[in-house]
Structures are given as structure tokens and as C-alpha cells.
View 1 (cartoon, rainbow, N blue to C red):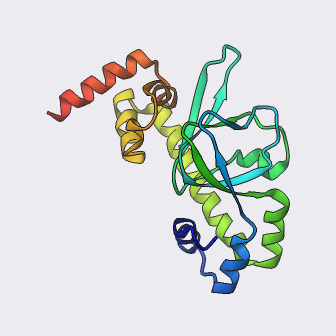
View 2: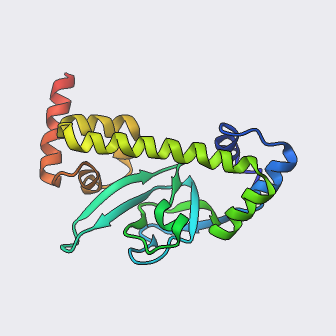
View 3: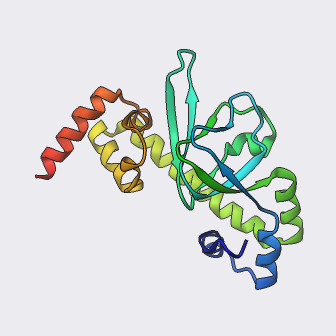
Length: 196
């Protein structure tokens, strides 16, 4: 996997691995191509894989009984994508994960990850730090949804995903912001007007 420098840089930002450790670590991951619109996790299934996005974009979402989507987050290049609760516990997922673009990911299953923990102990530290960062980001997102205006949430979206607005349909952004597609159009107009 040494031919994927973004993956290596991402990992080495968190933990110092020797060349031998990196070679061993990366050998546990499998390269997969995922076609646009493919669902890699469906509600009710167990999340068997943790994946790192090399190319493309995924949405992680919940669907209510009326089939309305609530997008928790988008996973783009250099992001991890999974239902962490289902992956760790082996319980059925309440989430869905779908590719919004043709994508390339590196995957690892639960058993291989446990084996990694045993063979390279510092890897446990790596994922503990990453999980803490994910939890902190999730908490900030919840706070944002509870008290920020739609305009502010839209601005936050553009800060977090600066190029994504040009890559995915507007109704996906609306589902992430928790507003209708029509209301998003009004928000975008207001934000553009205020920038002038």
C-alpha cells in the first residue's frame, strides 16, 4: 500500500511507524473500487468493514419510515467511512452508506483490525486518537444542528467541505443541513447576497 501516500501520511500523522511496521500495517488493507450509487452498508446489516477513502465521496445517512434521508456526514478523500457502533459491537446498523461518486477505498475487517492491535500494539493508540477526534466532531455537529441557523450551518458545511458543493446534488446538501431543497436555495441566495 506504499503507493498510496495520502493513506500513509494520514496514519503517520497520528503514530510513528517504522518502515517494517508500515509495510505490515498496510498489508492488512484491501483496495476496492466502488461504483457510484453503490450501497456498501444497508440498515439492518452488520458493518463488517472500516474503510479509508482514497478517491470519491460517500454519504452516511439514516432513513425514516417515510424514506426521508438524514445525512450524518460525507466521507471524502482522506476520511474514514463506517458505522463505528455496528463495526465495534457486531450489532445491526441503523445507518446506510452509499457512494455518491465512483470511489476507491482501502478496507479492513473487524478480525484483521483486532489482529493488527495484537501484532502492532501502537496501532491501538492510533485508532483511539482517531475515534476521539471523530467523537469531538460528532458532538460539534450535534450542537450545530441544535442551535445554529440554516445560514450558519450552510457556511459551516462550505468550510468543512470546500469543494463538495460542486461535486454532489444540492438535495444531498439539504439533507445534511436538515432543511428542504427549496429552503436551501433561499439560504444560498442570502449567503451570496451577504458576501457582496
